[in-house]
Every structure is written in structure tokens, then in C-alpha cells.
Length: 283
Image (tube, rainbow, N blue to C red; front, side, top):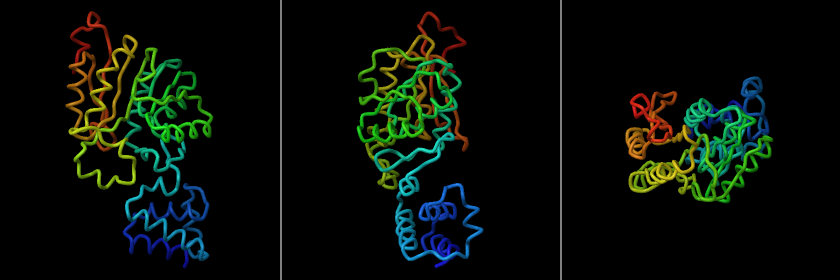
């Protein structure tokens, strides 16, 4: 089978997107993921039998719903190549919205903790942009931490990792707290389509907001005066998350939209009550 024939078969017979089919073939052939031009230049080359069988297996798994990143073992996130597998969530491009917002509030030598770090995507992206900042990353899963620590070591990024449940083990106060916690409701039918990813990192209570409630309630004791709490959440949860932040006493409560125009992240600033003026309250 030729390269072009293999790609056409993956797209027509299995319904894969062309890009997915190309990236899986590059992975099969041991070529860089940015080398799609090579496939075009060699579309008449024949695949040997072993490569053909590996490719067929990968495309079938992708068609069955396995995330592309789990099959190739890597995901590009904020300019970094992360190694990922089924021990962690597949980092989504939408989460880069949270990183962009965090960088607006993180000073050159500031301090930040990333709660529920997973693959380390957020913490490592922040460290890559603020090399002198003190970055901590926490996860309750030792398997997830192993993935994150391996990514940090491979990328030579000095992030302090700790196993714990949210703020467990934290003693200091931070300029910034960020988190992409689980936020899908336990009975949400979309969970069936995410069966390849760790359930612990996906769902959180009847309405999906249990983890966010916990973080919002505990964050004030861990924030410096003027510090920010920034949270990623589901596409219909912005209003509810803003309400939780406001009820907890945060100021400057607001949301940010992702590239699709969806309110993807919400956050607020922690100020002593005496420091809050009408211009700093929720808007």
C-alpha cells in the first residue's frame, strides 16, 4: 500500500479527519509531526508490511475515540511539546486562554500554584514564559505527577511538584492560583465520549461544580492581598462560577472567552474588604 492510498483509506473507510490521518502516519514512520510536506512529496512511496499494520491499528483506535495525543504520545501546548498518555487529560487548546490570562497577572518573580496539574501543561507553560517565577503544581494522582515531572525534566523547566488534594500541604500565599479542575456533571452524556481519559479529572458532582466550590472556598487563605484566582470551566458554567466568586468575596469578578467565543475561564481578585471600592467589585 502506498502512502496516499493509506491516507485515503483512513479518511474514507474510517472517517478520520485528514490531519489526524497524516499525523498518525508520520508517527508510524517515526517522522516529526510538523513534516506533513514530506508525506505530499512521498505520496507514492510504499509502506512496508509492518508499518502498514501499525498504521491500520492506530487509525482504528483513533476511529474508536482514543485521543490522538494518546496514540502519538505527545501534544503541542503553548509552544511546548508535552508527552501525554492515558494517565492524564489530553491538554486542549482552549486551556491556552487560561495561560494567557494568568500571564497578565504573574510578575517576573511572582508565585503561582497550579491545582490539578495533570500533564503539567499550565504550570510548564507559565514557567516557560516567566523563568524567574516560583511555580508549584499539585495533583492528587501520583500517575499524573509522574507524567508532569517527566515533562518538566525533559523541557528543563524548574517546577515544584506536590501530591495532594487541592491546597493540601500548602503553607504559603500566592500571587496567583490557577486551575483547570474537573467540571463535568456526573450524569453528563458527553462523558461516554471521553471514556479513554481519566474519570477523576473530568467529573465533579451532580452539577460539575464541586471541585470549583472547594477551590473558591479555600483560595482566600492561600492568596496574597491583591492576588488572583483563575479557573477554567465548562461552556455553560461561567455565570455560576462568577456567582461563586462573588459570594466568596472576590473583586473584579469576570470571565474570558476562548477562540470560539465561549466564556471558558472565570476569575477574581482577592482584596481585603476595606480595600474594595465600587470600581473593584464584581462586574
